[in-house]
Length: 109
Length: 114
Image 1: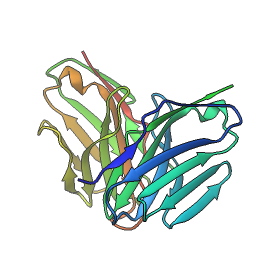
Image 2: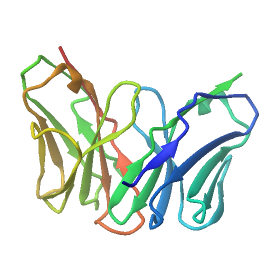
Image 3: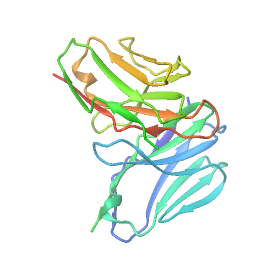
Image 4: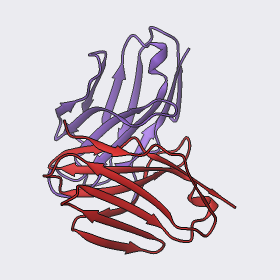
């Protein structure tokens, strides 16, 4: 069974802090890794993707991938109240996309 | 470039009725995925269509069905509605099957069963 696991949270950080969101996956053959942000009542929005081991930075967001440990993470620097949302980790192998249950992040002013 | 569109935005039905939800993909996308997201819960995979064919199905009863049209748009039909079918139904589309590309979501249809 191909699984994607995330801590459900809630994760609470103060404004300006770094938020660290983690995800593990079970299928070693997974090829592509994605982070989506979902505001309450809205649809998921793609914010980051990463294919290779290491870090990938985009503005305040950094995705980290470690295929040996089957671990992918998302760091949000200088967290803002507008970052408060549920973050979904998604892992793709061929045409099979698996989503984690999401981590709820709250950024407190 | 237009994104994924879904209609209607909201749908209210009574138990036992049928619901039809629609999805139009991003231009060039041939794959359509349907998900159910009950309030406060994660995404549950329903169906995947590609090039007009049903390619995969999640763990849902047969009363959940759909189809994909030649223009790659898709319909999700839910027959004999039950109260627990109340949820946000999300459509996501992707380029031709294979590769690393991700799925892009539409705004969803909120189905309420009374």
